[in-house]
Length: 138
Image (cartoon, rainbow, N blue to C red):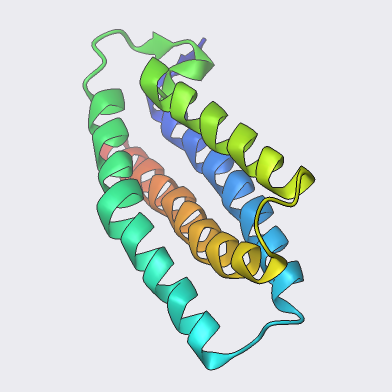
């Protein structure tokens, strides 16, 4: 079991790793497709995922973690059951798409770059929440 504030740190590390991995796949695929329009679409995808999904998710889980009454929780409590299911689905879907080459590499480059950047920013936001929490408790 870990202190509640460390759940934010665990979330940060998980999201940074996930974001980096997805972004890395996107960047590797981008080598052959760097065009201004593709970059614009990646930015749009980033904005959609960040503002419509991940920013809200970070706020929701930060608030949920901060509301725990017990001083310690199991490490996996950085997420709720629904979020783990969504994460599993996204990982499985991504692996299937790439392994069976269901989408052209250019689409992978565009989509993964935008999605990975949004995931990575979620990790940074969880780190920020962790440091704010540490400062408040000090």
